[in-house]
Image (cartoon, rainbow, N blue to C red; front, side, top):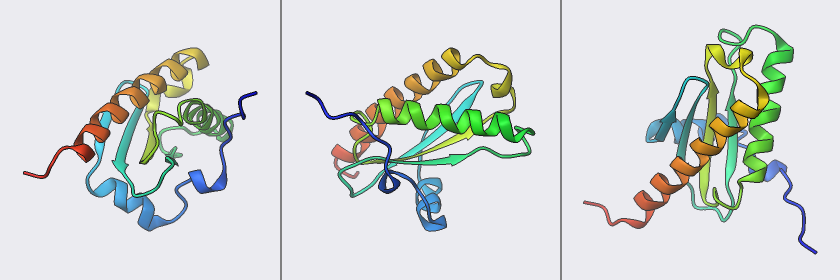
Length: 126
């Protein structure tokens, strides 16, 4: 039987230096709901950081919902995101969007940044 995919503490970006590392030179994917920034790391697992600003999402309930959805989407796609540090930034209109549409949006972001960042990592520097 297959072991369930879990979201552990080691898969979270916790320190400001980790966040800054991603902000410095990210692979960027953006749509109407989220901006996802990613950068290759030296680990054998992916890590997730969340930036759900109160300025864009006023209610704590809505912020927590977006965080929960982002963590769940990351957990389901973690095999694709091995070796990447990812940041999810929410945009203003995300709170009015249904969960299914947000999950589809995040799945497209994961696919895009995984393909783009892994190809950057494997290509030789110019």
